[in-house]
Length: 361
Image (tube, rainbow, N blue to C red; front, side):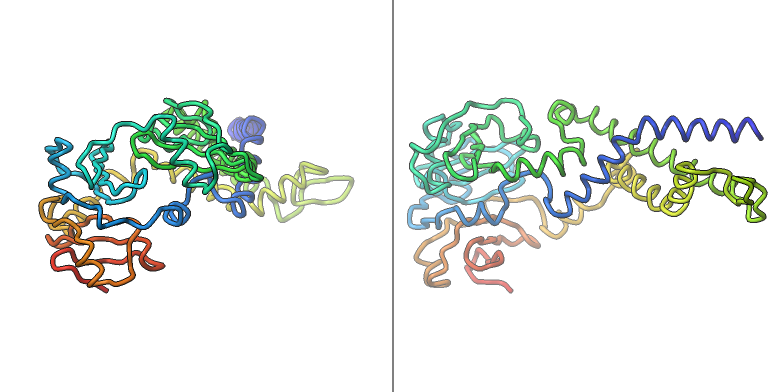
């Protein structure tokens, strides 16, 4: 068994040497994430706050009529009525985005640089002279890793105290990402090193995933080996002689401290690294055969049928909910019946039955 013990010691030693830097980086950046959060983004609250109220008097088309104008033959997975470039518009999500203006039925083409500048100016409540178009992204950069489905993106810099950068999605016609000097700096010491969100690595999804899995998995194995060694090398009868003093631990100096701290915190280290590895679902242990989509379909009573929704009538809305103009409306189907989720009316989204129009609590 001497050779096996020696092999364990060498494996623990060299795995520790190889993995110490990323594991310390994960630990320190994890503390940073407790205070800094994740990657810079446009929060749903800020996005909703910057949206103007929907002008329902300009809505001329029902969702089904808008779908016809957009030549859409398949049901959307999601449908939203919002304001784009100061016009009410239906945004259909069918895996890709299509926008049909609700006042004329025109299908929106990807916004150009001048239109993106106008969108950004209205979002920031600043004149266009303080904004600068920095280019069009067709591949993600460091701050748009999660926006691949919203490409191309217009990058716009703002002359303000926060050194704000905006990314306007050409197919969505709205700001998708907002960063500032502060959020970018915090990301570099927190989310980016913790998640290994370096764009050169993260843009290759499978390589990034395998890198995190192997680093965390090998780190957990090294910690388990350390715990095993701590157990088999400990002797309560103090057989070891260190500086002529009997000892239960066969190490002195820094090695002794490594042994003690490893024995005390080893279990936490193993569970921390192992849980990080499992969060990426190796072997698809949690996602395969899930029933979530089936449950949602059962609750909805079927796919989103746009023919169930009438045109939103401004007069009827004002009569039913006076002074409660929504900023955005999402179309849902619940147990086969059509509903709106009206946002911007109250602090929380408001569920409204579509036909007849009434608030559901």
